[in-house]
Length: 108
Figure 1 (spheres, rainbow, N blue to C red):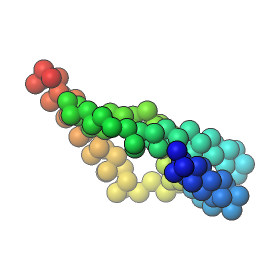
Figure 2: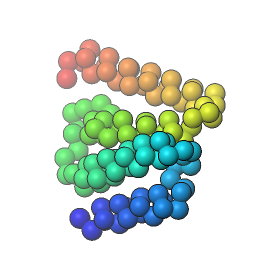
Figure 3: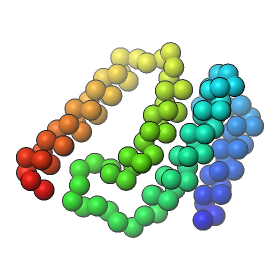
Figure 4: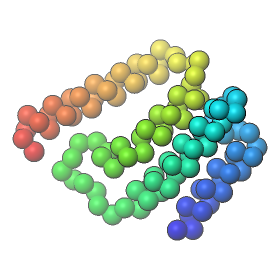
């Protein structure tokens, strides 16, 4: 997968330049690099996966790497959680709860 190599080299370039997710401190940088290293290959493989999963609610395959996205988001937004971000986070949880309830009640 040549495209995956391009993504990995981009992460290495960002780490060397010190601009990776605007993290502060060596510990945060190490966590950020580890999260990117886990996220990119996994997301890259899922982005070329052929099955669409038509009988499902939401992005089922992205759940495998969503944890790493949340880690990067937490590092980036350490002290900057605005009311808009909190409102969108709550709305996304409510939409997923609604989807789960609909899925269960319609007996798919």
